[in-house]
Length: 417
Ligand code: EPZ
Image 1 (cartoon, rainbow, N blue to C red):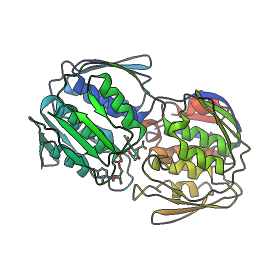
Image 2 (image 1 turned 90 degrees about the horizontal axis):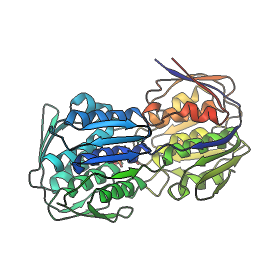
Image 3 (image 1 turned 45 degrees about the horizontal axis):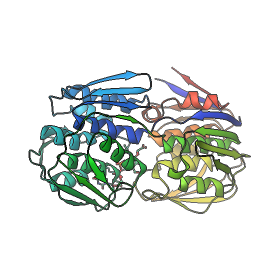
Image 4 (image 1 turned 30 degrees about the horizontal axis):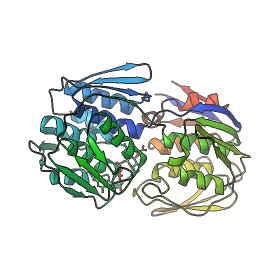
């Protein structure tokens, strides 16, 4: 078992390049199944979730190989339409293969996906979207048996703008006959990136980034080359680390246009933030102030994925900040861990109130989920003494090299086997 050790109290300085976005690359890897060709995904982060997606593609009969920072995926020889339960359980995004396999093979067999435990994470909207396109789906002994021989374009309304359901609907709709209109679609940047990738494969998709996505199906698709955009959540993590520790860092490739809500909160807390179009620079004296309530909501609102990280940044701020988590019912699992470092946080239902503590002290803590784990690292950077973060497999699902990146910025942080 590996752990991350953080010795707090160092200011951060220097520059780091932000990795490619996990939540972009996973639906893109599912989309390669539809291409029936060879796709080159450049700037693909080396993550355990990416590895799981590669294993799924290999299981289906495709070939995946890493060439430096790129993943080359050949899906010409896909011959299977079933995903083993063990691979499904490893991450939430395994469910994205459902729409893609259905579109490519006309049938698909899988089980319910795993992923971070943030409260109930049903897939009813995914199934609703696929059924609306004409798929027959039944559940037998925990396995989902899907037939979609003749998918037909349709009007799909999502009663929640689910990121994953929007992506699954887009994937299946590419292979459906006729026009699909997805209403109340998620507007996250990752949806726009999936649209770009699908278009590069020859698909006809429009409207991503708005609440209505329109897909014209049945076009023959082909392989393509795509460069994955920077990860806005990883960028936010490093900004929060610098905000809390103090110092000045530059994040190459970070895209301020996708991060307005987070940058606004960091500015309110007293940080100086500039973007030159190629990246973001943050300067902080490490003495943050409390900010107006932070309420998570779908894009372009404050991202739920940044909630724990921002909370960690404000643990020593002057005053109290209220957080309201509106997307997931159980996304405060990091709170008891943060309290071990001396954090003063009260939770009630979906609300958490953080009152700045004078100081934090190192302790042994456990990552409870991916972003909650990153929050423990951000907290450890400000704590006196050593913080030991356990269960770092959660963190490594989304951060290719959090230890290398932060130590490159001057933090005392190590990974120990
Ligand atoms: C994506 O998850 C991200 N994952 C999550 O990031 C992120 O937290 C989430 O979007 C919200 O932004 C990936 O992109 C791989 P949703 P997803 O469907 O697609 C409910 C991270 O740390 N819902 O938009 O699973 C659901 O319960 C991860 O990188 C249904 O009710 O999120 C939630 O309350 C964690 N039925 C809300 O919608 C459904 O069928 C939003 O979930 C689907 C979702």
